[in-house]
Image 1 (cartoon, rainbow, N blue to C red):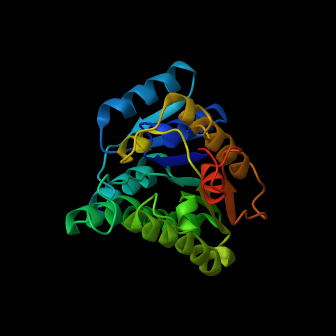
Image 2: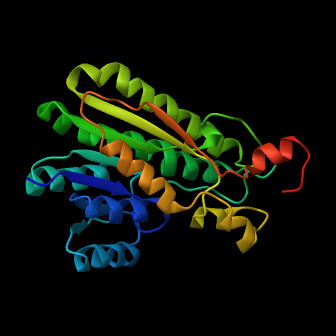
Amino acid sequence: MNKVAWVTGAGSGIGEACAEGLAQDGYVVVLTGRRKEPLEAVAARIKAAGGTAHVKTADLGKPAAVKKVADFIESKLGRIDLLVNNAGLNITARSWTDLTPEGVQQVIDGNLASAFYCSMAVLPMMRAQGDGLLLHTASMAGRFVTPLSGSSYTAVKHGVVAMSHSLNMEECGNGIRSTVMCPGEVNTPILDKRPNKLSEAQRAEMVQPQDCANLVRYIASQPAHVCINEVLITPTRNRSYLAALGRKL
């Protein structure tokens, strides 16, 4: 029986690369995001390569929408081996002087609430199986506080890191593992929300979505008795370090 992976934020960036890579590894992949067209394009490439993909659009900030996808997985696919909790977003007006309640709520729903809802939705299936892996995309902003990512994004990504570790504390006796991946700058569409635009040369030096997907595939390949709790992955030319040293970015 093929293993089943649910990848959120699967229409672009890290999620897209993870979905295609996991399909190559033999997973049946369920692709979720808000926009149907990008998900369908990813699914088409997976199917053209001989894999199996199901598109399930959802606003993951809404518990009922999350439950609907989880119910599909349970009723139609019969199991869930891997949740790639990758959906996320940021806003352009991110400094304290520019924040609005609506913007903050958007960041909370799109990054932290959605990660909780998806985790809660798959845990009953994983407990019944006595096995399962949850892998969450957080950020270096989930470990270090800097103005660049904004206060709301930094806060919610710290929450995702804490959430993952709490899952391991409570679920390790059920055979369930949780990994939180904390990337530095990754060349994904979320960078388009930066107040200061980046050049193509700067983006080329960053971690690429495929790099993160390769890491996810490695983590997913580990035996069930191994839990990789947390991983930091950054560009070699780390702009945060260079800024701290007062060097040219």
